[in-house]
Image (cartoon, rainbow over all chains, first blue to last red; front, top):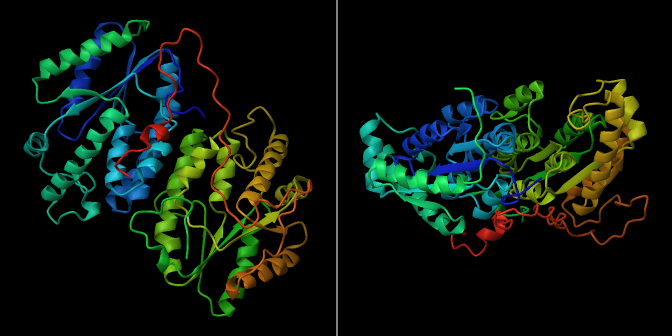
Length: 227
Length: 284
């Protein structure tokens, strides 16, 4: 079992991280388009999307059965399935893999839920270290406004309602996201995250991202992929 | 007071867990569930409230594991973590409430079987021990010991060979019999290591169920008497192992072998362990 930092694959792995409303998914979609146009074989993998685990996670969330450890472990199971069946084989094959959220999401959320920081880090030690991990830094108020303008409401676990921070979902969401933001800030030096100022214009952020990615792709081979 | 192997779960008050946690461990087909079926009424006759639990019985993940296993598409790390999810759910929703209420909890397998299986499938022992670090240390673990030659007829003449218990995911080219023999031989060796490390009380499971039960009952009675005690049955090994591990339960394992050096010309930075990177972090 290889550990974080020990993997050596011809492919490249880029991940985006940040609190809800930081604009990371928008940026990753734009990067995806560009890499494809450049002729790279690009694959996208999203947090919490393994078909194997889906029913279990759905049941747990719907019935509010998840506690801090089971919330953590079911997401780790989901991640492991994508890592073993998807991400690692693709990296071996030389693909450029893009992940919307990665292990740092788990480190932030699970620690805010009271799990031991070292326990969570060791739990995910089988993960491949990304070629670059972009962290979209945004003030809480800006992110809150983006989220609450665009949606009718926030979900139970998304708002951290399981932590009994507040009776009001919106207030709970604010406190929870604030704590997650604090955890992200601690991880910037710990994992050498590439910080993106998410208050800049979409174009400016994308330009910075493409420059960073381009520098890392210098030696990567381009794959001919079917359109 | 009750202890955990590493950091306990958030919000768990260990002092409240006054019941008894008794683990029955042993390989597939050794007769664990038969023994639990005998133990339960015997305990209840003495006025003890009993909860019994086993792998894959969680409301959250039991069904999911079952379905995933039918497809035989589970990765090894994924399978381990799915079982850890099932365990955590049962710990929080079954075992802990029962212990808080003063029950005797009988568990058919515990983290040890799960660790042995994971290690057999290439998991880093450090990693799997960490994953189960929140588990409660039991009051006693009774290990039903059997050799592979005695095990095979029992399995053949009861339920037959199971895909996973035969390690067919590890030796797919073998037939079920060869694979079972190979897998179980290695698994039993791993169990012996765990028996020493975690102070199992070993019970010879080769005689008939009733004889095994008499031994088990004597061991359980001693645990429930609440008196300080010596292990009833020694963890002696054929090789005459030392008793250094006796009396203490250790979580740490020797560090695994260093990974192979990266190929020449690699420009990636040196391997970095996640946990060492996190050491000294102020957010503990």
